[in-house]
Amino acid sequence: MTYLLLYVPITLVVLAVLEACRSDEPAKIARRSLSNFGVLTLALAVGSVVVYFINRYL
Amino acid sequence: MSLRFELHFTVLIVGVITLAVTVMARKGERRRGAAFLAAWLVPGAGHALLGKWKKGLFFFAALGAAYVAGMAIAGFRPVSFDDNPFYYVGQYGSGLTLLLAKVISAEKAFPRPGLHPSWFDPGMLYVCVAGLLNAVVALNVIDLRLKGAAPAPPEAEGPPPAAGAGPVPEKTA
Image 1 (tube, each protein chain N blue to C red):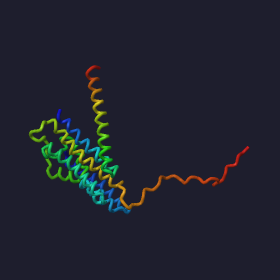
Image 2: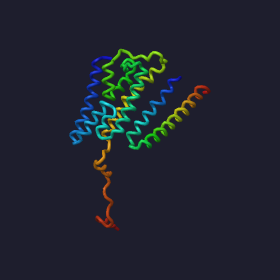
Image 3: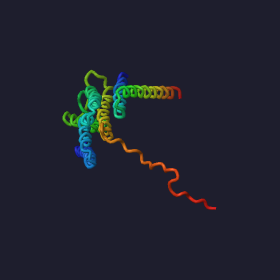
């Protein structure tokens, strides 16, 4: 289960590198990376909960 | 994996890179072509060559950290084709990772002792992502706007027609 924690650093690296390709401002890169990370994590968490309930009750 | 397939794939990657560099050189952008090649060889080197030192260092640090972390998890053995063909191909995104994979090649990677086997797959993923992200960074070199360069040309839209200009269509009864 702990290997799921490896999701955090690699996702942050991917998002930061992709943002750095678009922008030159470090503050903007950090802000947008964290924002995208939050949205992505939220979407994954909601999806996981939905899949859990589908498998559990349907 | 057969040696012939590996040779063909290596020739394909080197051919694509050579073609891109040649096209850029013919367009009079030799420096950018050299930067593209350098960016493929070493993460961040292309940006550094074009004067964007901070970005180059950032890319080198981020991708290098991801690669080293993945290698540490996988017991400092590169991903072999038999472990995972997709992760293996990801190493071709960077010349440095490709070189390291060839120098310390192994029949089969295995997780570092002391780590749970479930960490092995994410470890290989880290190595693969470092290579693939470097391909994105190298492609970014082609599109990079340089200081002092001519501004991007405006979109292909004709000038607005002047009032009264041009023939006025006659109304027919």
